[in-house]
Length: 198
Image (tube, rainbow, N blue to C red):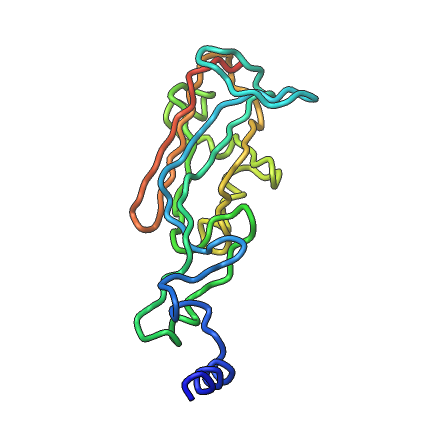
């Protein structure tokens, strides 16, 4: 008698997406929730027609061959069932963000790249270089590429590949630092090796 009753209930109500048998949703292909645990910033050279190579400390690179690779280190997980029983849990799963982008549980409110050395007269040491860096994926200046993300209308990519709009005023040492800040107060930074930008 119990078996037909259970089958009838399953048929009428359907199986929940989460919460009935487990405490977490199973989201395929990528969980929509994440916790940022850190960031990385790598300096590299990418001459035309050649593969990209990380820069070593003290290495020289031509201005237009220089690249910055930014990566977010994050732990991804499924949605946790809210209080209120398994039926409420059935609606706890959100759609995943586009592939290669972070979800919406942690939002970025500032992203700034600076150098420990002067870049030119308008960019002394420690000032934002977002207006001289270009996001290679969109072809936009970094400040413009970030507008929709910082206004909450877009997703922040897990990886950014940046190049220079123009070389520095004079050849010399550079060491870039990225400052990544979220609306929940979490702040992360990362620094490249010291290298010479020609």
